[in-house]
Amino acid sequence: MTRLLLLAIVLAVAGCDDQSMRQQNRYDTYAPSKIWPNGSEAQPLPAGVVAQGDLARARDVKEPPPVTDSLMRTGRKDFEIFCSPCHGLAGDGDGMVVQRGFPAPPSYHSDRLREAPARYFFDVITNGYGVMYSYASRVPPHDRWAIVAYIRALQESRHVRVADMPQAREKLP
Amino acid sequence: MPNDRPESPAVATRAVLFTAIGFLVFVGISLVVLRIFYGERTGHVVFVPPTLFAKPRLQTNDAADLARLQAEQRGRLGGYAWVDREKGIIAIPIEEAMKRVVARGADAYAPIDSNTSAKQPAGAGGGQSP
Figure 1 (cartoon, rainbow over the protein chains, first blue to last red):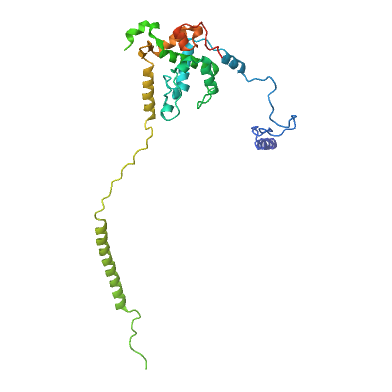
Figure 2: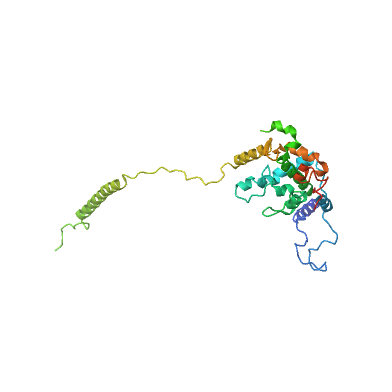
């Protein structure tokens, strides 16, 4: 009987404490600390540290992937998701956002943009231009190149010499 | 000599009765006058049935608007058409254009004009350019 009573007391006492480890010693963000020489909890990254995937991203930025069917499909999908709200599905700069009063972007079918190098489009997607904000955090470099390839296809679709495609003559209105 | 006459009632019954009747008559006359007055005053008022306010000029069916706009834009990507008949420039379906760009291989990123004229060497002005 005494043992049972002791056991019950031990179990009851054990249940009184919060065993969930929810409250522990920790530093708040930018809290002062005596451990480090600069007296702060926040420490700068050691020299040479990069985020995981940074090297691959840098390589993707520098080297455009070969244009394949798959890349072109990716470019079309991403263009319709990210670009068409302003640029329009056909690249004329007449997307739905523009219909609601937002400044219209230039048409991809203008002489200036038809002659622009691919890197120009990539840089605009990366850094933004005018009222267009940067899409660097939304579209990875590989997919930015895919969009650039699809922009080229959009331009191509509106600028083919009939002499280069004689079979199209019979389909023309 | 004791006063053996019965004590007169303290309340003047006639005065109270006249006052009450007078009040009722006053209320009755007032009701009749008010009835006539408001009948004259409000009898010809025509109550306008409640109507809806004009709707604000906003998109009422944005999904349909978007579908219509996209259908129109996809239509531009779908067929053959003349862009500039004098210069011999035409529009082709986007699927065809995608195949043509892919077929260029290393020149796929190059500006369209340089490809169209086919005068520049391979890789000129392509993705590798700064």
